[in-house]
Amino acid sequence: MHAYDQDPMALEKALFLGVADRVHTEVGPWVGELDLGILAAPVGALAELGKALAPWAHPESLWTDVGSVKGKVVALLEGLLPHYLGGHPMAGSERAGVENAHAGLLENAVWVLTPTERTSPKAKEGVRQLVEALGAYPLEVPPLLHDELVARVSHLPYLLALA
Image 1 (cartoon, rainbow, N blue to C red):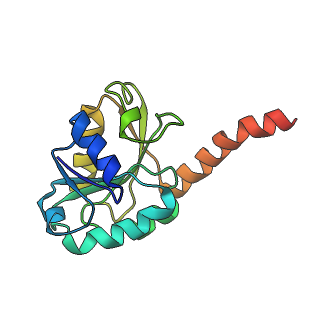
Image 2 (tube, one colour):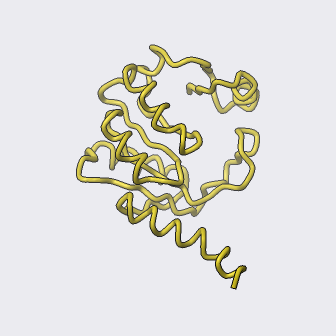
């Protein structure tokens, strides 16, 4: 399994924890070896990351992301990466980094998939299989509806606190 990060310390942790066996601080030909690529970066960095990976991506590779915003991200990435399907696992914590992951993190979680009319059947099937293999439940929602629902849910506790 390959891991890419600009931070060498994050890659050292991934190697130490056994979640990657090949690590990279630069994008390059190794991207073409991927059957599946998962973009896990801050939402604001996903478009640039996709642009950097796209020239190296194999035309048959599957791609997804785990960003919490889908509308703009999906619109950009589905035109860049082959067989792309946006995703948002509804699980996790406030702690970032590979050292805070654990095997049961996605168990029984909902993983929102955000297909569009441009999403290939290969992407839908492949990403759905990934989600189910990780113990999560896939739920298909259009990208803009996802953003509207997440915004309402994430802002509701704040509004209630103000009231």
